[in-house]
Length: 64
Image 1 (cartoon, helix red, strand yellow):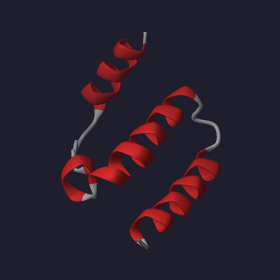
Image 2: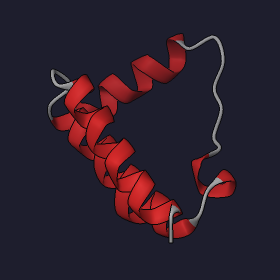
Image 3: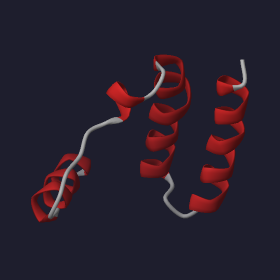
Image 4: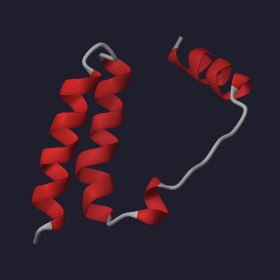
């Protein structure tokens, strides 16, 4: 079911960009963003909370 929804979403997109794995540090992509995207797919209702959590983790990683 998720695969069918993914195909429908990508098929209807006007523009597609892939940048996460090239344009940021691997430790941020793998420990923050990938799990956050997975969490969003499981529960898309709390976007504000998820963005706040991402921002907190980003500050911790990039201030090192």
